[in-house]
Length: 68
Image (cartoon, rainbow, N blue to C red):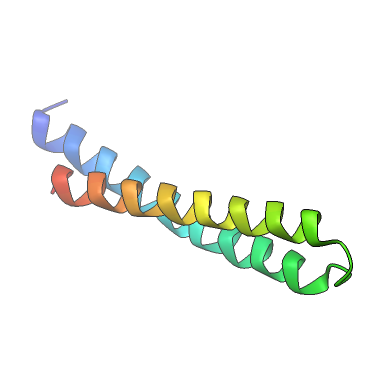
């Protein structure tokens, strides 16, 4: 397999991961909306998880661009 083929595989995998992370971020945000308002600690933890997923998504997207 050539370097070009390897990079194409890496780019495709990273693009797939970015899409999956986007979906997971939406799911986590929906959990925050569905949580009882009096569970502030739970909601804060869910929003923290959402931010972490967004950060991971940005890093994966950056890696995808670098692989291009």
